[in-house]
Length: 85
View 1 (cartoon, rainbow, N blue to C red):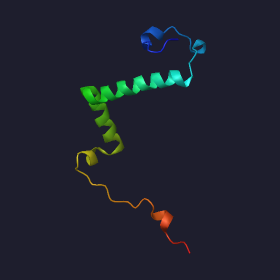
View 2 (tube, rainbow, N blue to C red; view 1 turned 120 degrees about the vertical axis):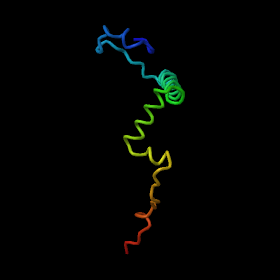
View 3 (cartoon, rainbow, N blue to C red; view 1 turned 30 degrees about the horizontal axis):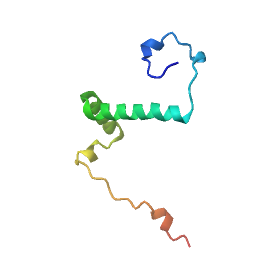
C-alpha cells in the first residue's frame, strides 16, 4: 500500500492485506502533509471556508466569531477555590 493513492485507485484493495507503516518517522511526514493540505484548503478555497463556517454554526460559535453574541465570563477555577470547610 502506498500512501497518497486516491480512493479510486484503492477500490480493489482488500483491507486485510493492507500493511500500515506505523513508524513515527513515516507517520510524522504523512500527518504533516495532511495538516498543511487541510490548512491550505480551509483558508484559501471557498469550499473550505464554507466547511469551517458550517462547523461553527453547528457547534454554536458563529455568533461569537461574528461578534453578534457575547459569551458570559466564567471563573474557570471557581470550584477549586470554594471553601468547603
